[in-house]
Length: 502
Image 1: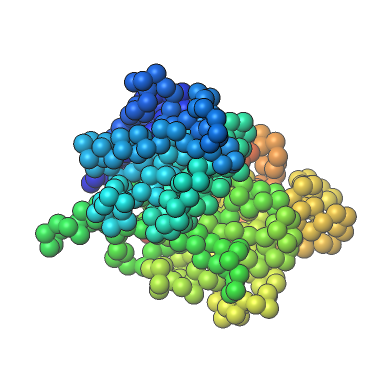
Image 2: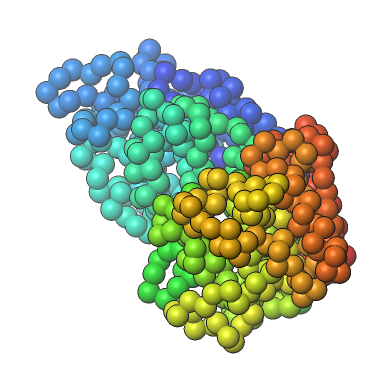
């Protein structure tokens, strides 16, 4: 991966850690990112005196202890904070500049405080002595020291790109405390995993973190170009933007990722609907919109209604149709070709995409002012291990969880047939790219097979990949050990054949 600017990132270890420990803990996450960044790990200044962290958190009326990193939500005094603050300032002066700061645990809490000390115009002062452009926090928490409250009261300092890695099973720093820290930032990127208090390196987190850094390098390159002599070219910085689907409501929304650089001509758009059995819309498929942007398309991840958020039908259908219409409606603003708008759905998100694609006028929401004026049928359909059929009388069966979450219990056969997409394929369906695995234990391959067969009977072009092995929910599958991991490359070749190179 070649970049025009290599980032320098200051890395701050956790309580009872040091620079060497931090390098080991973060190795799996950043080990393949040396082309993007230099990671500068440092020891807390207290370590040379035999202490353990960046500070000791103690009640005001008690002596310091060696065991409290300050994660408690109760008010505490951080003994050693001033020493750390002064030392960090000297590190920036002597070893800087740094583009960003990455912290783990107590180091992540410290990173949040350093953001509060950031000079937003890049010109350090005595009050705001630090200059950097982004922050990454793993297992972080906000300071419990009342004297630090003013550092969080500088919203302009916290209006910087940030990524927050949070373990749902973290027994050291409760996840709610990490979310509390993330909420101090404008537009934080939150990456959750099922593990505990570690610097996680799951395939999705590695991919999302790498994409975050890649965007930072593009932004840095844009800044460098702005300071370069006239005529020097560089890609324009692009940060994801969140667009509400409906007037007067913040959610559901869609997150739009724009490719770097000014387009020579309008670009395709790919809307992404993640899986989740209609219980959540944040299941498999994370990172797909960013993948699309990295490959020259406008990537759009769509939030849609689920059982936990208002019930899926007809709300989920209305959200999907509205998102497609909205991308077409704002095509000129985002540099999109309104005739090249595709939809990618995983699992239950695949069912939603298949439903809107086969029946784009099934339901018209009264608040959708674009209905009847802008088409909701995508120009291309991409489905990964999709739920297709709810028919109860033959294989593949009812898919209990997804069906129940979609239209409730005890739906009759007529209702099930109405929402089984294989029964509604016509020649007007756009071209389809479809993949699944024979041993998917959650959504049988029969779903994909019957949809592919229905496409062929209707004369709809379909590219169907049936892989012998692979678990359900692989998403982009970039780190899978089987040939499935190459599906995105084949998808890009197929998209290029359909649309021309993005």
